[in-house]
Amino acid sequence: MRFYTLAAALVAATPVLAETWDMPTPYGDSTFHTQNIVKFAEDLKDATGGGIEITVHSAGSLFPHAEIKNAVRSRQVPLGEFFLSTLSNEDAAFGIDSQPFLATSYDEAWKLWQAQKPVITELLAKQDLMPLFAVAWPAQGLYTEKEIKSVADLNGLRFRAYNAALEEFAALAGAAPVQVEAPDIPQAFTTGQIEAMITSPSTGANSKAWDFVSHYTPINAWVPKNIVVINKRVFDALDAETQTKLLEAAAAAEARGWEMSKAETEAQVQVLKDNGMVVYDPSPELLAGLQEIGAKMLENWKASASPEALAVLDAYNM
Ligand code: PCA
Image 1 (cartoon, rainbow, N blue to C red):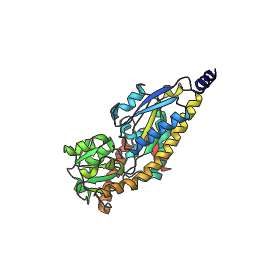
Image 2: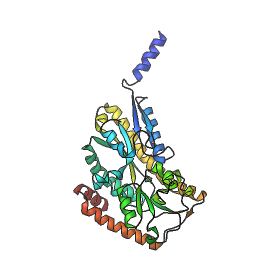
Image 3: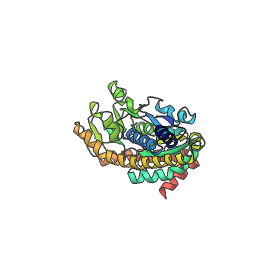
Image 4: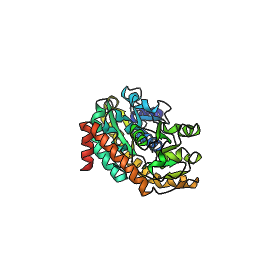
């Protein structure tokens, strides 16, 4: 009898529909974004009393990076993470965080996210998608085999790119861009596909950049973001209480992720140094040359940007 009462109480405390959600992400387990998402999954599981359990599939293991958005859109998975600016081919509003020298500090990146959020929320809603949270990477720096004194030193280098903006940046610098996903960086260096890259201290350290290049300089050219989106129909089907708990866990993950990112910058530059890399400040000449490329890119961006994208820029500049 007693056992029956206990069992009944347990059943009553457990939501009727316990769900397991597969969540694809593009980056590896040592990446702070992935660690933040694992914590988000734990928080959500606790908050819902086990009602929603997220299984994180990192490093593009469930879907390749380029397919994650469509996998969520078509409800092959309920939610997923990707690099926001990879959607710049759909609308320039998605890619604005990768415009060189537009937003280069965390404060500016946060301001840009606030300007971007309402606009991309509407654009994503047309695809049945809803943003849950976005987290910035540390500012992007330059990894090469030698010290780079001016843009001319980049001429002809096989240069890793991860989105269209970086491809344009590298090409305008006279380098030869090659698209490579973050988990494939070591292999791309080893096979000679690439010989230089621009990325964060996090991705540099996570991919053991010191095995391939000797120099790092924090040009801090842009502060791009990852975004986590959920299928809107999946979200709408949740009861109101679960929706609230999900949004609370997402807000906590966004706040925690930006703090993790800030802490990463210094810590991971130290890892680069500890592994023997030369970390040097960019020369005024190099910075001026890169800024010139950035200015040209922003002109190009404006010329082809949708009214929605231009509204993001205006809101950011206000
Ligand atoms: N790391 C990711 C995106 C930006 C970053 O810092 C990458 O290099 O692919």
